[in-house]
Image (tube, rainbow, N blue to C red):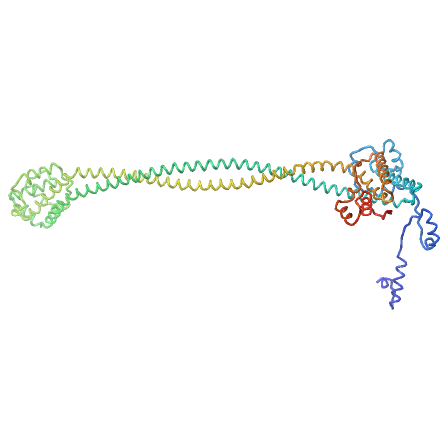
Amino acid sequence: DSAARDGVIIDSEEELWRRFTGIVQRNLHVVFTMNPSGGEWKNRSTTSPALFNRCVVDWFGSWSPKAMAEVGKEFTLRLDMGDAESVGGSWGIGEGEDLMVQVEGAFEGIAKGGFHQAVVAALVQLHTITKAVSEEAASSASSTSRTFLSPRDYLALIQNFVTCVNNQREQIEDEQLHVNAGLSKLRQTQENVAELKTGLAAKTIELREKEILANNKLQQMVADQNEAQKRKEEAEKMSVDVERQQVTIAERKEKAQSELDSAEPALISAKNSVKGIKKRDLDEMRNLGRPPVNVKLTLECVTIMLGQKSVEWSDVRKLLAKPEFIPSILSFDVDKLTSRQIKLVQDKYLDGNPDLTVEKVMRSSKACGPLYQWAASQIKYSTIYTSIQPLREEVEQLEKEAAVANEQKEKLESEVAQLESSIANYKAEYATLIRDVEALKREMEIVTTKVDRAESLMKSLTQESERWSNSSEGFQAILRNLVGDGLQMAAFLTYSGFFTFNTRRSLLEQWRSALDLLGIEFRDDLSMVESLSKASERLEWQSQGLPSDSLSLENGVILDRCVRFPLIID
């Protein structure tokens, strides 16, 4: 592709290989570094002249404090160092002022004396302290080797510092997030428990109210059942009385009707006989100037019963001449007879005149015989009707009483029906209330169980909650000491691997003294091993044969976390 872009034509694989190797030779650059200090440099340069005639040599000498400050400032410019700068404070006061002056040249045009300047001064001072200790250790009589520190180590210090601060901040913020989440969950649980308790109290009141309502419904239902039973018994008793009255009324009616029925056939027969009277028969009687006595008396009797005031023969003849004479007899209403008419007819014509009989009248006039029979049957029927009047009045009174009793019975039955309907409603409402009560009890049992479990959990987590609260408060202190701790850890990872255990302890004390002079906060009890490794990692190292002493564990941490390969002499 490159040959095509450059317009070169390649005809064979050999030409392709030559072009490829040429491109590699033009573009391949090998960069390597070595520390030339010491007597070995002379031997290396003698045995390897290509280091000078084939390489471009870039000599790195010792950096001035200002140069190291410039580099430290640039590499830590974007590093989050917390809010120490914004909160305000004083750094590098008193004996630490000289350390701040060494690096103030890198902060020209920027507010001097700030926290960032103190951190850069700390980086420079940590490197300076370690370099001095290294030279001192090399000049001692017991020294068998020498450690040379160059700007490359200083760059590693800065890189380790930035990495440690970022990692520690991320770890602390993550732990703080988990602790705060746990505390928030506990607070939420407490709020939920309080809310559940409030709801439980409300449901207890509701349960008590529903139980009272159910009890009232039950009492009302029992009272209505008793009342309904009482009304039912009264209605049944009233029904028996009404039936007994109906029997008495029927007996009285039957008796009265039987007496009337005894006279009714004669009355019907008389009416049928009257229907058989011809008009010529009436005309015959009307034309009689001096009618027979029996005929005259019979017609006078009929005239009185029909309500005529005069019984003179001339008036009787006029009555016979009327076309409605026979119809008025056939449609005669016996109830219209007065007691005076009945008495007059009985005394004067029927009972009071033994010579006036139906046989004699029939012999005197065949047309007048049926009229006599009619008059006699009407008077007999009326007499019987009048004689049974008390019985009829008794029946009428009994019927009124029966009607009243029946009305009372129907009223009682209606009341019983209403009470039974109310009882059915009460039963349904009572059943609903009982279901609601049972549902509330079950719900309250569930809520009570939840509350008990939550309270038990909160009680068991009381110590854990206190520890979390203390941890949450301790996070702020850790964050305040984060930069100082990061400087210690970075110096430990960068430089400690070169020295013995005792020298490391001495270096740590000098590093902390420098941080004190600059006013940078740090933790006095900071453990490098525990801060830079996990317990699981340490167990893994020990399982692979690493001894459990402090020096071995420190060496393991340095090997695992350092950005360069340290020289470790066992």
